[in-house]
View 1 (cartoon, rainbow, N blue to C red):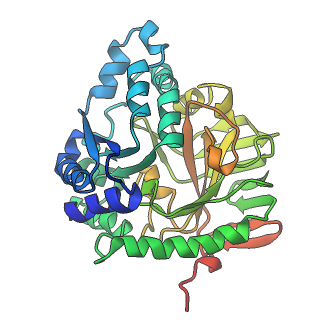
View 2: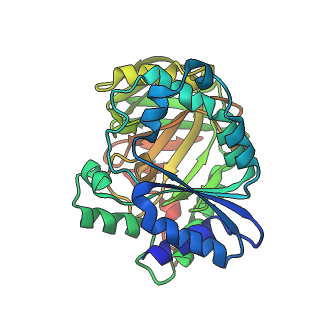
Length: 363
């Protein structure tokens, strides 16, 4: 399975070509997959650069980095990223609460410090982010390790003889949805505790088909920055820096969050919004489309892809979807509309009752 996983990441997701520099950034718990990726990059003719992170690394940085260094751009990391043509990131949690209890303002400062590095990666490399299954992540999802592994590998179609073909098929169906949504101007989201309008006029839609996240399965765009009006409630919990934020409700006026409450994690919610001026504006509106992700697992990478959900990201937008919002954060919050609620585009119900008709299998 590791070889099939690595082949998908290197071949389909990042399309590594001969002579390309490829950074492979993995958490220590994913070392078995790291070797498979390293070997696959070599087979493709690329030059792999392996970077391994230990579980306490971020905590050590937050605790011991001086205020002076924390405020400076990491020039060496930026220079290294500028020399890469592809970037493969494998997260593998072996302690879901490793960052819990750390100073949230210093965590935010650490995110802000890496803004230029992240912008270089997002805008100038072929990149993919994935999550390797571990007992800790299985526990966070409320599943046994074996069941969670089946869930993870199934969500990437790795149990299929040709996973890349399955992703190309989903990409074609999502393309129909993107083409249908592209002329739309106004989005209206309604559901429990939710009545939000925003504009996507003139903003291109992106077909997220596994070339950036693996697993993937979403279409998304960047809302017009000053357009969001109303309130939205996010019932699906969010794991942020090792802490859970749950029951978030946001109220927007002229695109800006003017009121924010959480049933759990209010301090972290407040800290995220205080990161910078752009943190209170939206950078993304996404629609989940993955048919094999059917339940929340306390991992945004999976939860935002659940068919019948939408997600909004506070903070940084994407250049290729027309966004102009700048921020050190990009925090996806997931709104579950499967049982109640709908999303209309210029008055047409595109998502209702958890279904998206335009994604139906072709005859």
